[in-house]
Amino acid sequence: MLASLTLFAEAANSTVRNYHVPWFMYAAIIVVLVGYAILEAYHTRKDHVVRIKEALHWSAIYIGLALAFAIPLFIFIGGQAGAEYLSAWAIEKALSLDNLFVIGLIFASLKVDPKLKRRILNYGIVGAIVFRLIFVLAGYELLRRFEWVSILFGLILIRTAWHTFQEAKVGPENFERTEITERKLWKFISKVLPIHHKYDGHKLTTMVNGKRMLTMMAAAIILVELTDIVFAVDSVPAVLAVSPDRFIAYSSNVFALLGLRALFFVYHSVEEKFWALNWSLAAVLLWIGFKMVVAPLGLHIAVPISLGVLALLLGGGIAVSLLFPKHHDAKA
Image (cartoon, rainbow, N blue to C red; front, side, top):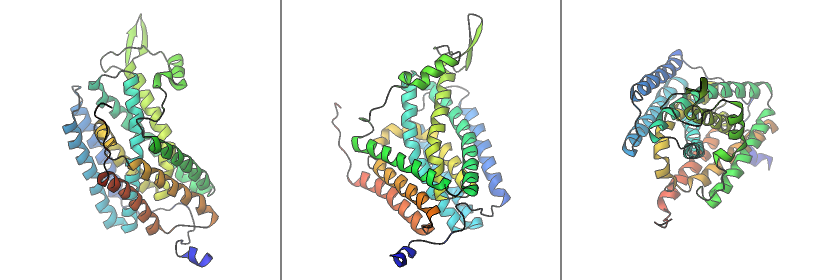
């Protein structure tokens, strides 16, 4: 039994590692973020409704940019670092689908003007990039100082895998979700913050009877930010499990998040087409959770095997969805 396990395990001194990352790779991340900020500032000078053709165009650009970033990783850091980055990016992209569903609920519940959705999502992406940096650094330090934290992260992912499995079983359209405005969080925010329950263009504050108050635009941004923080509790441990290197983990998050705004506008058109992705995502989370739980116990899954399983599960979900498309009643 022990002999067979060694075929699927490798010795490891720590749950974290540090690759030697050239300075220009850090500079590249900064250039990409600055470029994104300039581009979105230009495009949001005038709010407009994002059509599916435009969303697909930008989705292709950001996916291409993320894949292009892997090339210097393979060249200057190594094949393992490049493979870890691609796997972490793919997992983060897949995990973001559930996040997008909740953001859609927020927009529907708060009756957000379609012209304002792009601007709100950009605010959300900026906040997510900042918070993910904090979460990645904190998760890395916890894993470095306390190896048993890997078990805690693993249990969190296993819990999320069970939730994702339940949702996949009934389908996201039938999965019971409480309206955003009926949740305790929204009621708490409305009570604590001075929110004027109306929009004033894309302004974040407005004057009401001589008092400065937050608009519904600001309230939507706050909810989107809080939503990402909640989902980061699942996604950051998953990414750190794939690559326990700070640069690889964070850069994969950055490139997944930059395409989040464009992906939102195509999400509903692909949600039913890739129906099996939720099943494979549940399996991915279960696998990563298992990997993190057993690591401190002495069983370290070999990196090539781990990445191969992840690629097989995610690729299998996409393949099954395309080979066995679901047909829905037009009236439904």
